[in-house]
Amino acid sequence: MFELDVDFEFEEFDLGITFGFKYWRASKRSCFTLYRYIDNFLLLLTMSMRFPECYKDIIASLWCFDNWTGRDAKIIDKCEFSSDELIEMYRYEIEQDDAKKYWIGSNEDKSEMCWPNFIGGSSATTATMLDNFYMYVFDALEVGPKYVE
Image (cartoon, rainbow, N blue to C red; front, side, top):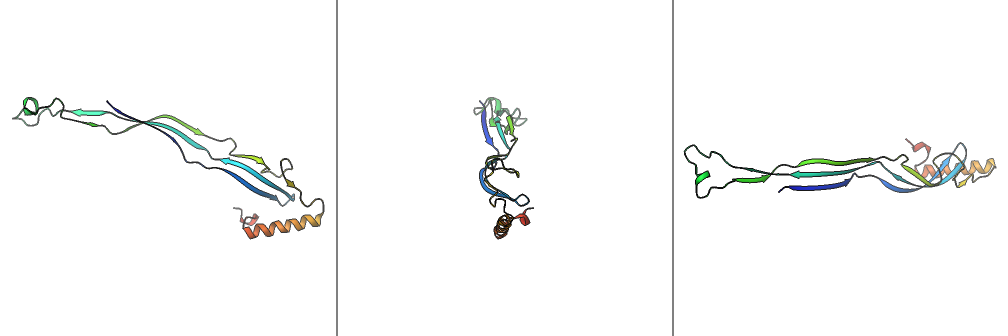
């Protein structure tokens, strides 16, 4: 007779899908992005075991042996479970080579997979006007280059 508990647990981790817009001011390139991200996490399988501990009082008193020969004598006086013994059966740290997986767009300033890419075309006036518009919006939302840590 013993007690056995098996626990299977995942460490808390972040998983999500992000839709974003990136603008590289130097190249005047803009890009909508859609990607999933997942953090590294831990998978843990543990077992907890408890065994019975039984005992008998050998000498309750020096002048009385009722605990051996008396009417209420027992073979074993008391049994109880031991404290938990935790055993780590399996531990696996899941590490992502690439925590972000881009489905649309890119994290780099390049044309591949980027849309709408160059919105202003080749006109310097249109590109400057679009750049000023982006900087106005980024400042209003407090997400522009000034706010990056």
